[in-house]
Structures are given as structure tokens and as C-alpha cells.
Image 1 (cartoon, helix red, strand yellow):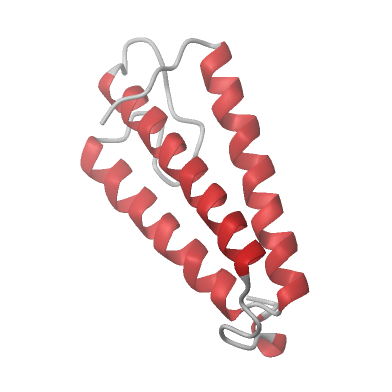
Image 2 (cartoon, helix red, strand yellow):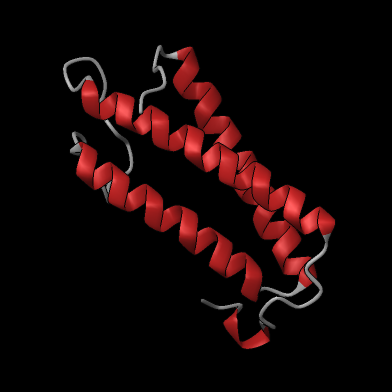
Length: 111
């Protein structure tokens, strides 16, 4: 929210922005899939995102992740080109870390 005053909706969106957004969105979808796997295996895993709680339902996961996906794109469109780039790269890095972490502890993918 702190960047909204300097935001310019859709300002200079280019091919690199699109590529980063597709990668970020893809990673969010992979995270979504892993979170559904956690929801399907409450006896083995728990969610660390306190907003969803330790054992979210599939419906909770779906609403949260769809909101995340749409919000990410909307925020990226509002940001200035330099802020957008930072925002997208940050999302890619954080999502990649958690997807890798989840794979390492045995969390699969589920839809």
C-alpha cells in the first residue's frame, strides 16, 4: 500500500514484465497445488501461513490462492516499471524458495 501514491496503472508494461508475471503466476499456481496437497494430508503436513491456519480446507486454500493470484497481477499493473520489476522478482524468489522447501520435505502437488 505504501507504493500506491507513486503508482501509475499499466505504465510502460513491456514483454519483460509479461514474462516475469507469467513466471510469478506459475509459481503461485505451483504453491497453490502444494497447499492443496497439505490440505489433503493434514495427518502428515500443516500450513505455515497463519492466515489460512494450520489445516485449511480446500475451499479456504482455493479462495486464498485465487485472491493472491489476482491481487499480484493487479498490484503489478499499478506499480511503476522499476517497482514492478522488484515486486515480480521478489515474488519469484519467495515462491521458488517455498516450492523447493516443500518438495524437500515431501509435499507433492495436487489439484
